Length: 495
Image 1: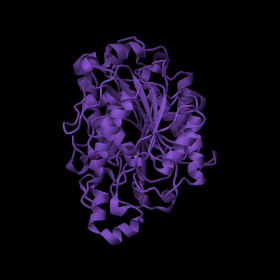
Image 2: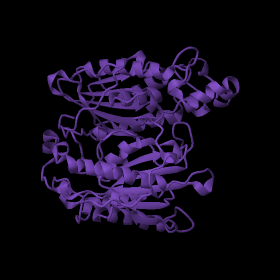
Image 3: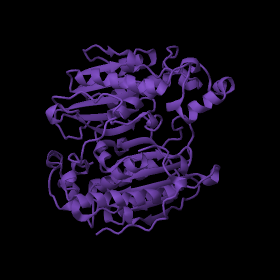
Image 4: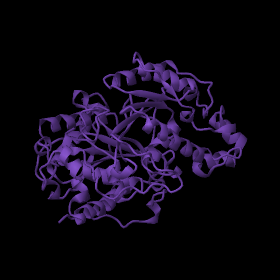
């Protein structure tokens, strides 16, 4: 039986603002009951076979660089940096045999698509519904001009965009409806692997609507310039909508922990979910990485690579599962942080608080089935295991998430800056992502995490304001040991 870490009681002060490596680490619970789709929008069209869709936002544009509000205007073009980002994305996706590429007709997106698509022989497919969000009178303004000219309306757009009306239109609601129409065309295309090159807001809407999430999730699933997000769609019997898994969110050409804004706002408070490195048991095809299993050589490399990536940040505290693989991963990160002076990152060493959290521990039930990933997914083993075990995992994730959020201080200023790194098995991190988004246990199969991956959650409004997902399942930092961006969660060789 799992022991839950003692944590302070839940308080309304930290309530969420929204309603409602190795193959073995691809944790999915396919037989948990289907996700509830929004009744106000039609379901996704049924599929005859699996499909993978890669969403890429355009590279930096001239209006991005200037700080102008672009919306669906078409007056900006890619900057030299934007062209370079698109070229990096081309190389990142070079080995992928896409069957089709849908693109926004706007110049900044079209040019990005042309660079990535390169010499492939099929034509780009322009779709006007993939244009950026329509912002009407706000388009072309600098943000300070928006505040000066529109006052309370502009403030509402910043604070409550899904309920904001501009020139008699509700831009976010219109965008969600457009995204649903885009999915109808993308998913009914005959291709098994589809590239979509579009924009920040519309890509957010595509991710959200595919998962059945409403307009309240606008600005919650970040899309950086040339960031790639991957969605896997699996057909279901009886003509039902496909199941959907967000393989990864916002894998960017640059570091995911670089100093940039989240959804247009600076963030000095951050939780980074680090999946522990691979273990001997996980490399042998079981749901390993738990209990007394130490890191194998690949796991050691993954831990070191993650430690190098996090050297770009001053980590304040490391909180890990008490299990061996998590502790070993945490120790590697801590040692590199404390050697920052001799590694050239700082002039003084960094002292990092490191502690265990029992709420991040995984039950030994995950070792009771020695099956490959493919067998686990086909049988829906995680969803079919004793339901109480899954409920226990979900229940402990609530306390674990609250404990992590409680590590973030209120207030502004340099003294309140804080980076918290949480280290555990992919299964507990799946639950934590759902807790961050205020989703139910049923949404756990909608996300995917690999050994050695990181997921970054920013809190630009502090811990009371809820988290913004900067990226999930980021593995590019692992170098030659990274997981290919378009590796399917279904372990399907055809992808």
